[in-house]
Length: 434
Image (cartoon, rainbow, N blue to C red; front, top):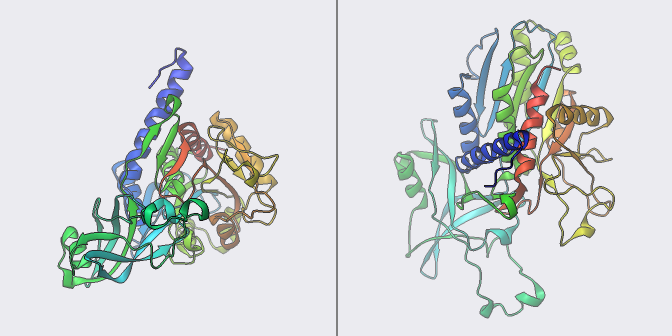
């Protein structure tokens, strides 16, 4: 990688290089939301965070702590001197990505090939998953209630129909039926027990598996490429780019910030967040209430703390696509390499308002990174994020941000390395003393 001459630029280049190199390691360790939550917790524990059990009584004093609830992870730094009205600064993200989920009875065969029964999870770009070496990853739960993480490595493929058998594809486009055309193959033969294979990989008896939450993931490694290696391609950057940036920021969060710094990485955002570990569920509120109660807060003090708090909802957004420029707003055109996005929507699909805009502008200025504004073309409505959901549930002021991507919801998404590192720097500034 080219190294420039000036001292300042060299430091920035080295920092970006180290950031994306470790981000690639993080992505490779997180093929499912369950793996992502455990990887965050593992790294935090190695850095001295104390892992707590929600069933236990929690310590009330200052400290650095983390909990995992299914595929979500909440971690926080409680400073010395915190009181009943000390505010929170929360970075909200999500651990799940569009994919395919294993059905209850997934083993079948057709035409001499073993197939896997899957459901569509969220809104993946179906064509991007064809002709890739795929793996299964997630959790098995045995009849004693114990969770066992499992991943197979390259094991599956969804083969595309050859052009000789689909002569209309060049003129009419690819048409995929979610049931008939998206069932992966994983072996040759007339019968095979996929769940037994997974149980063996997890080191548990097949007849002891009582349930499973297992998804499909692309196995291709993250890669830098292009002029000056500016591009970064990988799966699951929506939204592990934000989870990783929040992890980096929390590890740098000072113990004297004047607020409680919180990383809240939820599961099930791609499905609407309505679960016990999603942003519409109680997991973040459960943690904040318990922390505030440990600081001596009653309901009034807790509401005062919430009124002084901020939540940054970080989720990937759209960069302008050079081949489809008409799909974007004509005046607001964020590009790869232009910095993290501030996401706005008049209909509150994003939670950003004027106060949130001011906060994020100041955070980026403090971090020394550029930023861009994103708003949708009026004829193409945007999606939503955990931002409005969390703001509605908690009443905490919220702003929506994220890195710009191309190929969002593809098996392989595309980012600029500078944007990834800049998001980490901005979130680190968000957790710094106000």
